[in-house]
Length: 243
Image 1 (cartoon, rainbow, N blue to C red):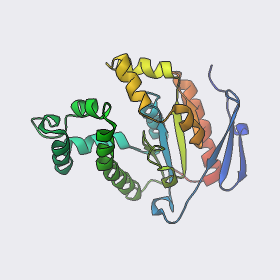
Image 2: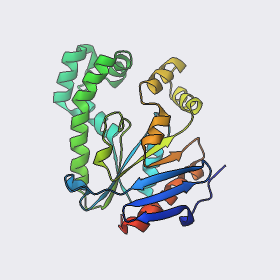
Image 3: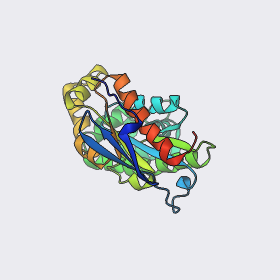
Image 4: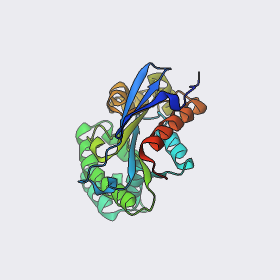
């Protein structure tokens, strides 16, 4: 069942905070709008961190933000570009994983590396330590170099890497475990692979609890958009900042 939400559900408490009451779930979501001066990309911009479980709809939500005039950045897309095109990254991965981890035409064979890192936590940590700082440097560069005042950055492992302080606020997109598995299987994974991908991440309930807002996405896109639009209306009321 879709949501019926409006500005009546958003109660500004002070200049920093919007409270959203989502009656469908009986939750109150606290959305702080922080602009700490030690993070200069937040001085004159609103930057939302977007996270959630695998196959929960982060990319779909990112497109909805884009259709509403926001600047959008995908950490996964940045990481994929680094693995495909950064010679330094390819060289380091080749040394760590062996030459079989590289494609004949150059770049990293993501499927082979993924098979290793989801079976070996030490290899996964090594790869994350290589890639994540480069990804963070790139998205910050994109935000600070943009004329847009509003950005959303999709980062699957945002909470796992303790990045929430880098954003004005954080949104989690979530769905139930069965739907996650079904979506991953539809992309060609086995049930065992799907479960392994889900379990390597922080439990989705914890991501929901730690977020400033959470969007429920079990497949009804109108439902998802309704939640996003109420969230954005609330930000408009508080920040008075154009995209």
